[in-house]
Length: 542
Image (cartoon, rainbow, N blue to C red):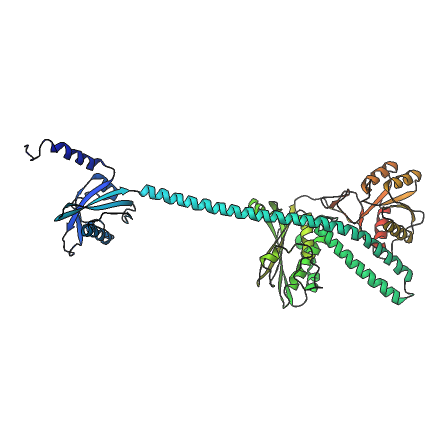
């Protein structure tokens, strides 16, 4: 037996365990009950610990330290756990964060030693990095889930917007075709009534009243068809440079008269406004339509605010609003303090013939006309509404930096512009009843009139005669349209003047909603006064 009372066989085994104890990555310690001044089972003292324990616990020189000295703020929990192990003899395994160091530990505690003098062995494993990695992974997963949910919601919104756009396009094509047919019929009705009214005159007041009533109804029907064309983006526009603040200010009296005394009108006009290029008459109609809608939403009175502002629609907004294009815009916002609209009504607000008003109090074409004009002008329109609070309609018209000033020739007021019998006009129209009205109207205006029911027939007349001053032709005709006819006619008579007419503007003389340069057009239906003024303007042009 050697000096430390160990046999040679015992020493290598003890050394192996000691080496394992000191070199293992897990923290390991043995503690025993310490009967100190705090009462029975109030504390435990460390009697052995390896280097990994001190490293994981973040506390140096652990041996000889008591639990309450090492971690005073959380000692009660540890003392209770150790006491439970000694009392029951059952091992426990748990995780705990050390408040003092912020490290996360995985702990195993079990009873060891003599039953009469037991100890608690504690095995620590620092799992802080794993806990943090798991937390980071959870956060990443949650972020991915949120992004996926947002993407799905955006996709659903885009799909819904696409369905809405396709529906609006399909309805627009339908309404445009209907408006075209109605305009041809109304051209005959209004023109015939106009001629009849000139024949009746003052000789028969009752007949005159009947004709005037019929004319009023026909003009209202013509207004409806114009709104249908506006929605379907098929109305011919005459854009020009517009200063929005001047346009809004110029409408103040009209708006106040239309709103009535129970609605307060306020305008908030920003300085340094950019210009846009649009049809001023149509834009005024848009603002007036919105103002009247706002008035109807405030039956007990309220406030209408028209605001102008330069704005930028970014890529994110454009992505979230199908049909919107990012860029610089002139914004006009019309805000009321009325009843507001729920989301399901806002979703249908631009649909033609959709209205929440009582029967007879609205056609359902006001907002659809707004939508059609703004889209045809390259802009964007958006409705924001909250029931019980009010509604804001924002119109975004594209900014232009350089535009060509348009020169409008104003028709002089006064008597009906008459022609001279020696001035010859060739009328080309494939629909007989419409052609007959045009012939009668121009004859009434004092012109010599020739007629043709097709482009080929018209070319034959042009080749045979050199005295034709004006070619008055429909645009939409079978075989050869009016634009091609005009080109062929000018090859034969270069000085020939041309006036187009149509009730349908998706044709050869209107592109992107705007009349081609140098083109004269009168839309169906038209009155004799309008036709006379337009013809005289063209013939008198230098």
